[in-house]
Length: 87
Image (cartoon, rainbow, N blue to C red; front, side, top):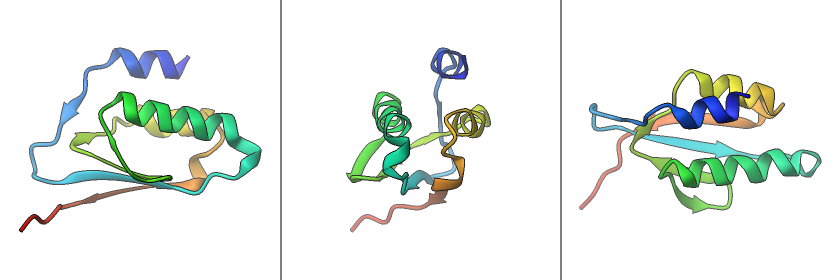
């Protein structure tokens, strides 16, 4: 399964100074997939900012989009890249 294959690949830390932000609003009808996504992001060192907002310093591989499709939640997930500004 894609879940297993994705976990076997090494993480790629971003070298461009940007962070990856994952925002989602997955309906209750896809609760298991939503819970899996949260566990998956946490296990890949993403930090949970809010219930459905995660940020990490790693790139998400192209297989991640396939994983979202397999889970039937791709349309509910947005992936952004941005710079975190510190004082």
